[in-house]
Image (cartoon, rainbow, N blue to C red; front, side, top):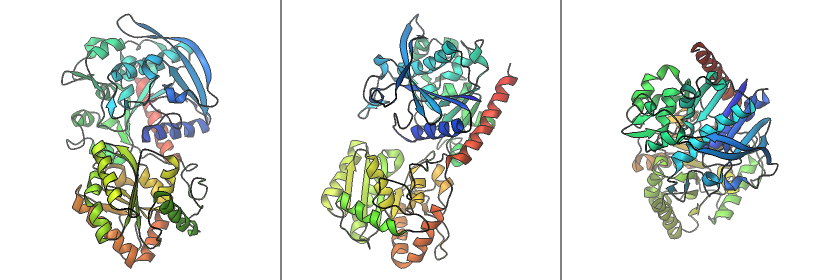
Length: 487
């Protein structure tokens, strides 16, 4: 099978979140299984120094609307057995960041990502490589299914099936209708049952209406987004297309996130020999300036600091937590400035008890996963989430809200039995989080044998990509059959 992944990001070359990891890992799985997999993504300024990057072709013509003909180059690199193709177009991609600079989105994102969509298709036509499936990732490439249903319907690409994955429905790519004209798509598509929503172009909606099949990154999230609470205004459309919608849980890259082989942690360990975890806790406390005390539970956080993630709930209760429960908090993340400032103030007021690193540091992320006793994820919604799976792999017990992929991966602790692998709460409130952390603390101090059992239960779970890839293979086959039947 020939598979084209079109994505705004792809780890390790460019990354803003879990989307990059999913594209990379899934592509490697299919390529290792003998499929011809190519990933098409922008050549951001941060990618230019990648080792092994080579020019694939010069002067790719990308025919946009308004009579504009853009010229760009395509570069390539290997990702396992998959090929990554980077489209070079400096006006759009030679700048810092992927979607924004700081916390401000680029004002020309509509043009940047409609260009990416068209360029991916032009590349395929230019080299005569026609994929069986084009896997489109999130709103940024939502116009690809529209192209295949309209202007490129009668081209060789017209028979290619499209699978559209929703990574986060909250971000939909809403722009002025002029972007549709720039993209070179018929203005007749600017209607409620295709690309239009509330007088604007909605690129997420465009993809959902026009693709062959739809996936989300966890089974529970696929059900949640069909409700007004989580549907972000598109729940009606998703109920309409429910027969083509399936939730497939993301996996994790066990070659990178494995405590028995991880080179970024103080000492390796595994489910059969947990001795190294204590050394990792000590190293984390030293690195982050926390008091070196093995008896105190460390609560770790690695997250973007936004409303979705619910870390404002933790900020509200952090002071009473360290006062009343004598815990330590190690946080790594960045996002909304008011939340960054809140955690910085808490760290300044609680030296040795709360430590905060604003930004991102991959080595520190691994240290937090390995050295923490508990990991806090109080998300208001969570399409999948990866850190709770990393945590379980490292014997770090997740404390999560029952939503999306968190519900699909974390099993509730049954007190006194040692069953389960984490602590789950339902209400997105500071009180609910405080009480659940209190429950975790009482288990830490009063039922240490249960802590050991929970750790081992999580560490033996299989979150590898193989199982998820099998499900995607069925969706691809389903999509190809459905698209073929349309001709």
